Length: 150
Image 1 (tube, helix red, strand yellow):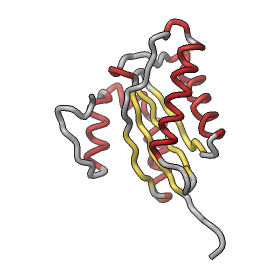
Image 2 (cartoon, rainbow, N blue to C red; image 1 turned 180 degrees about the horizontal axis):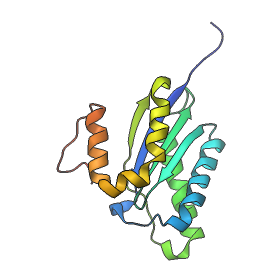
Image 3 (cartoon, helix red, strand yellow; image 1 turned 90 degrees about the horizontal axis):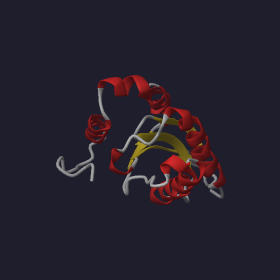
Image 4 (cartoon, one colour; image 1 turned 120 degrees about the vertical axis):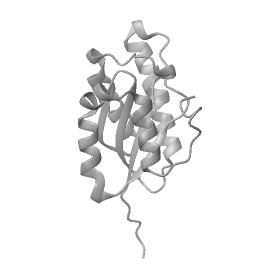
């Protein structure tokens, strides 16, 4: 076979450093558009992006030569620089050092899009800490309950 075929979907989650409520409603749309633009420049596709006060979710389609770590690292580095420059009130803005990433099958992608679209409602009932713990458990990822938010 002379061609490479792939459809790799990733659900990526990362928080502001210390889970500070820095993602104000008046800037989220611009931030998400900027993140999607970074993804396009890396030749990945942001299928859906969502944010609440302290974290971001992205459903992205990556190529077979991309690593999750490289893609997320570039998204976070470029967007944090942009946030600090664009919003002077957020001069000390940073993302957390880590991230969570989950593989998504094509058959489950609509469910993930729905999940992302309902972040505001979901977080009226449960904080990020509970959401992340539930996602890690759902995907069978081992973690230290005392340090998974470090």
